Image 1 (cartoon, rainbow, N blue to C red):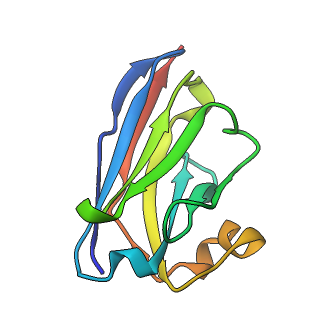
Image 2 (tube, rainbow, N blue to C red):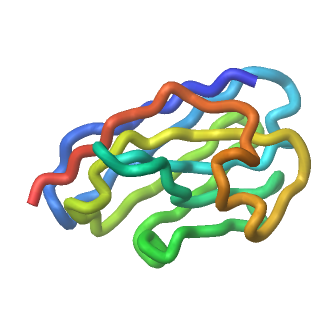
Length: 126
């Protein structure tokens, strides 16, 4: 599967952005999807993940209550709605995919994912 992330940009603190990740292929609904981010000088970190049919979602503590991950399998797309953005959310955001069903802690590590998008820059100004 190939992934194409989009929707990043410059936003003021407190604002919102919605990231999209479009996937190629016919079996998108068989992939567990994740979002990660990497700030300058820091390691890539988990942000959110979503199961096959969107019934299971997972979030990093730092974004709970502010970010929402969703997917539209008919459009082969996963979304990350980001509200109440903070300066510390500034990073390059990557979408990632792994074939099959995974849940819980397995989704929090980047090594679990086999496919990665190119990243989209999110900059939050304070």
